[in-house]
Image 1 (cartoon, one colour):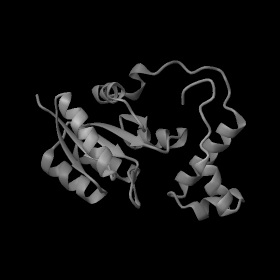
Image 2 (cartoon, helix red, strand yellow):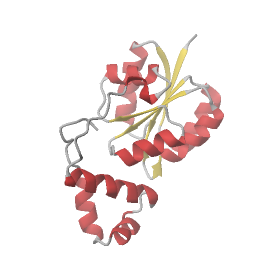
Image 3 (cartoon, rainbow, N blue to C red):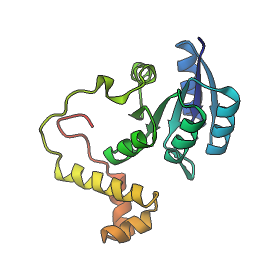
Image 4 (tube, helix red, strand yellow):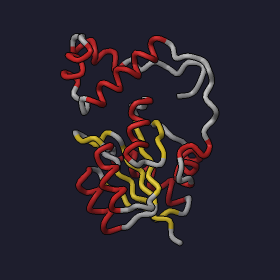
Length: 181
């Protein structure tokens, strides 16, 4: 059976790199750069695997998960993001993604994610270490931002902080504590 990979990524340079990498791994690849193209190409190409960027220019890739899942119920779908947070990972899985990876991602990690149909197949057990206060704040901000569909002004109002303060906090993603997130 031919492995067909649809890459929906607005960064054309990254999409081209992913196509080259995955073609070397035996995938027949197609790429597109926005949500509309993604749905159209999914109907035409009928991929077995999908790599979906969470941030597609002005669009949110999370909104594509459900329509893609309805169109391709057996597809292995992996959400890629440069803005990783627990809140968005949970939301992506809830909507139907099979896996969630933070950019940049190496080829082996990508292959592992594409070869599984369940996120928890290779999950390490959670440690009992609590999140740092900065990391906890970051996760809460991400959750509220997600609830406001990425609207920074509405999120700032809801959190009771100035919009510029929130933007600065969003730019300063805390590093992982002693455990991987």
